[in-house]
Length: 118
Picture: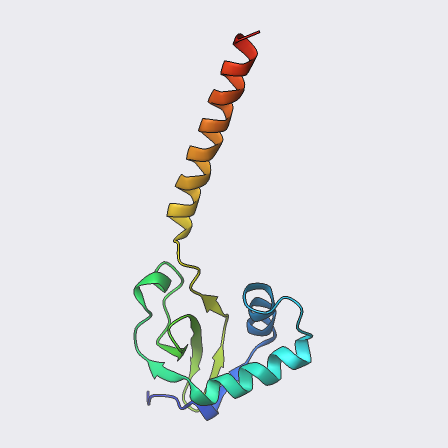
């Protein structure tokens, strides 16, 4: 299996939808597809995902657009497609869940103190 080139990568509808959801919520699908087609031309093909994206489903190759956008590639031979769009948000899902749980427990403690102070 040879390493794909950016020109060989097809952008899937799912990838477009995730790009809109995670990067540019106000963009129309056709405009998002055009933007992704332009971005893939400056992207780099890698064999491993960045550390922040390693919790996702593994892929043979990744199209890296800067350090914050990763398009995992599926396929083989002469046909490759970007299966989704991963975006670095600065915090892992696990850390975000812990933060939410901590905030929720603090909020319920405050509510309990307010109820008992009357």
